Image 1 (cartoon, rainbow, N blue to C red):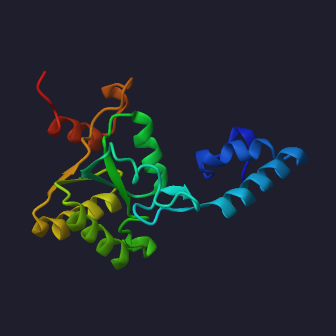
Image 2: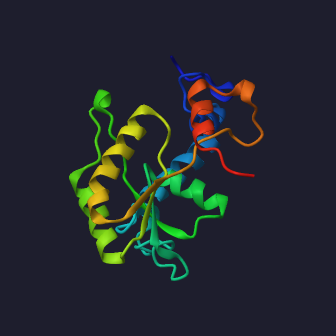
Length: 189
């Protein structure tokens, strides 16, 4: 299905909708092209965690921040997840980006190199807890199970983000899986 501009379409990712808004404006398209070319030249992935950073600041600012708790390692699927968690402003630890997840239907897996980097980092930094901050789909669940199995022999505590109802939402708008997970993850008041 073709992209339908500002109104978007069900097949277009939400991040693509603003791009569609400038399709008729050549000046905006040129600005976008220049910005993307600049990003391609200046941005890279952090050698330590896989977050987006610049070539002149690698490892990234999070990895080099001495106030971060290096004993708490949050594992995410992609670099954008790091930005979202940082915006929440409550996580004091460091990150590791898997750059994917197990998805047999799409022939995707977490590479051996990434797993080796994760294990080495846990050992080198003396990580006490690995927080798996992956999505709640079947592939992410499989990835979490695999990681827990691989990491358990290292003697590290492996946790996962709590599941539940989104803020500002109600039970009537939640699917059965979300409600099941919210019930299992209930907290004392």
